Image (cartoon, rainbow, N blue to C red):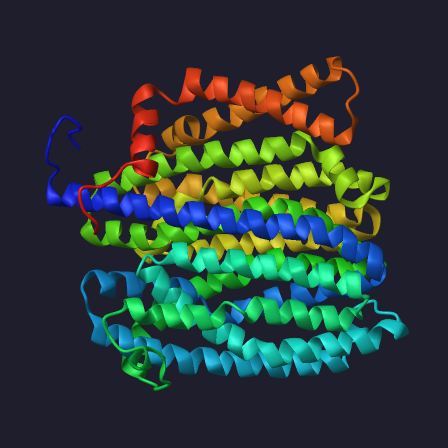
Length: 524
């Protein structure tokens, strides 16, 4: 790209416009996750205080069960976005319609199966988990609510896949942010009006379903009638093309979801009481803010990576992966190390003195997430290649090795057993990416990617963390809020100075500004 040229070539202009859409989708996604995280950050301690640690643990259990059953997606979400993106680039609307209508049938069937599973689990809750007799009625009612809502939740996935392919993630994330605000209001009203826990759970579920009509309405951006995208009609030949690709993603996702979402269920079984799930939910809410950001980047990058891979432009793919890894690492390192720096104060403000023992495990979880999420651009490109068989094997090995750690250490380490298991899983997975996928499949320099795109930002985070700890210790006592503000300000100053001196050169800063706020010559 020649920055001195007054008129950019058409392909270059398209790339710039596409990059701006990626950043726009990412920024709105990050904003949506921040809103959601803030809502949970405020409401979880209030809900725990109002309903009690044991009963709130039931909500954490219900969330974990619902999340684990998402594996029934069979990897189709990733496959659909990949193929819808490529067909959108080719304006193959007829094929998109055929597959989309088949997807409605597919996801409707999955939703019904999910509903049956929730109904069956409502009967066997005490055999599966350490539930007290007094908790059984509430547990059953939650399973009934999930059974009633799951079909609509699954069907909405088709609309989100289509909008992702159309690079409408900015809209999707804006609606998601509104839904998070509604959930926040529901929680406050539940406490203010002293409603029962099941009534709150119903309100929460309805708030999560609220975006669905807006998703379907937004499908008007397609140059075909919405009815041709959503009316159920099975077309096995068209659907099979995505399904074959998606099954490999499913096999990989089966082990990933099992490793991630089975851990709290194992804690509920082996840690000696359902209360431990409240501890898990507390640190998960903080750590999953970073995971959510990684999910946003994956969601936004996958369509772009699929189109870049389809062109066969290796240089463009390499440039995209390196720049995306560098910028994502800078952002995530800032978030992770700020949270670690203020972990004691955050838990104190968040839940009170009784939860101060979670600081160490929260910090370990955050570092594990940073290691995992910096790999998002590489993972997006790998998924776009369709060469995922080796990932299935590595996910299986990592899952089989890490899950027994949670079971073995749960009685002694409690919530720490799940964090330790997650760390082992991610170290094995990221190691496999750098040893195999990056050099052998993507033909990229893994050492250069790690040492020049990720490590500088991580080192800057460590330096700023140490400076924040040291400097704040010399300052007068300021109270909890004052400590957080001053420590974060010192961290930000040191981290920003480090980035300016050693990471972000003038050309990179100018390029980033133009990408974020510059006005393109034309819209793509």
